[in-house]
Length: 501
Image (cartoon, rainbow, N blue to C red):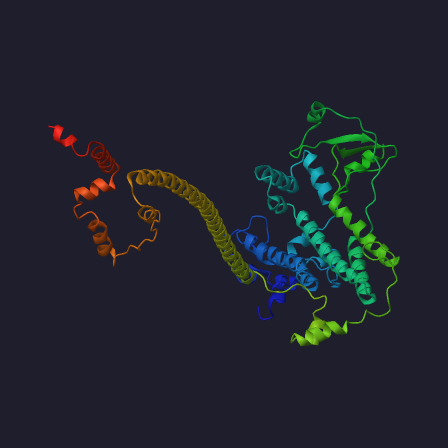
């Protein structure tokens, strides 16, 4: 392949690979004929069919859908055209086969294919189509939640899926242009909606009842014959004689003879309509109606200006001040999403998550420190309150000590008055008594330097022996005895002692 990816996915190139082995190999006597053709294997169960299906169908479809989701509609349409191209004008291929670029889909393009499948299932004849349908039903029952298992045996499902995704891309493309709400974008959106409408064609009409039918029980249907799909082919009588069964291209149509007498055959359970597929007609008709009646995509009538609104000069000044190019800013308006995807965004997301995690750790640490500081401040406040309370207690103790001191001074004054009274009785002079009234309250500060001196002075007061005479004079008992002796001497003139033993 020297022409790149478009040539690799081109249907003409796929056809050119078909060769007959008889041109290169002469069959011997024991060789089975006819010889197989050398072509791209796209069969149901071929050895290379899975690889070819993934390469020529699944991969382009996946890329196209991904581009459409990222608003790269034109590129998505190019990838869709590798499978389905409704704009093809190759007159050498009949319609509708020319629109399918995947060769396997060109073999099944009849719109009544599902009806034919179900009808063949209900008939008693054995044919290839019936065997294929029974195989598809059995695979469906074995794997009911895998739609690709059914679609690989009934390619019409893949074809409808491709057309629906192609229409989704066109409608999303047109809506993107419609929301820009300018005359140029509306003209372009109109062409895209018209293309979608041409692909859809006329909207299917509701089929009237084909005849009168009475409900049947399961036993009656079983007697008629229930096929592998759970349906039955029953005879009905028409109001007007016409054939209701699909026509056959080979031989005489058996249903035509019955239709002449107003008797036809039809499936008991009809094919349900595809509501999602029918919704495309309504969507495209709604968009075209709004455009033709001067409405925006929300259905609000408005008058578009002849020219686009002018660009804000202030925004351009800010862009230049930020170091941006004006041309790039204008060209980037209404551009598709950025091409930066995948691992780079994942790496950036992980970096942001790491930053958020570190920020949370720092915030938690700050909160913990704040709580610790609050507890420390509360503890200090409590200690301050306790200190104030202890200060008040000490102040009360000091006041109590002052009151006790005053009480002791008053008690001392009372005792001194008594002492003075007795001293005067004993004959002491007032000057000697007044000397004892003054109390020296000065105290020497006691520390390590003067401790020995103060101690010696304190002990020295009691180290000297007190004479007996001084002791008798300083005590009330001795004074009293002296006073009594003087009295006795005065009375008896000292003669009493002589009489005492």
